[in-house]
Length: 257
Image (tube, rainbow, N blue to C red):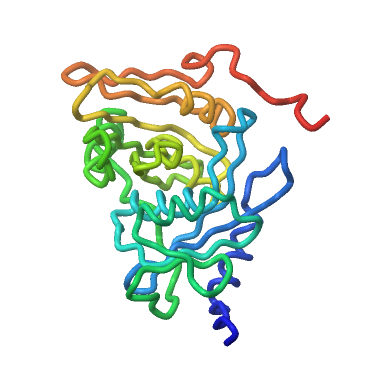
């Protein structure tokens, strides 16, 4: 018996967002679409880093965008483009198994009819860096942290003035974990937000914490002109540019030449 066709809505949405993929090194664009229990679709594109291991696969980008949007009711996943072997491991961590159709994973209950694409933006915080950090603190409540119980929230302001959330999303396979900062950056790339303005970061259990090395590298590559404002508890937020956070970051300018 032939496998059922992939719904055209999934392939159409994936094709639409694939143009936003950032693949300057491999030139192999890929898109994934997460399907939520009510049919809402959450896209994610491949985002490459000059530090290759820091590349955000399309499926990881889509799943973390869903979680940062407050949606963990993931019932399906569709992948367009070359599928990394890690995708099945990633999908399994969210209760999804390979379906009869190639490039599709679903929950035991199956997938609903595809609906609309998610709106990933959050309400803009009040003016000021302290308000932005407070918004990051609120977003951190959406973190998926079964491994560490250490929530992190980030909010990224785009040049259009809109704000995107990011949270840390953990997985039993630690190679499939994504930090809050990279979550927000990946969502920005997926939705065509190429220019960014500022980011606020909050680790509620550790005020004063700063981005990890991997996030610093991606900030330097994807948002070199922003200021990252970090929660300092009772003190005023501390702002630093990516260049200050990671001097002499690897640019990858000679890669592929």
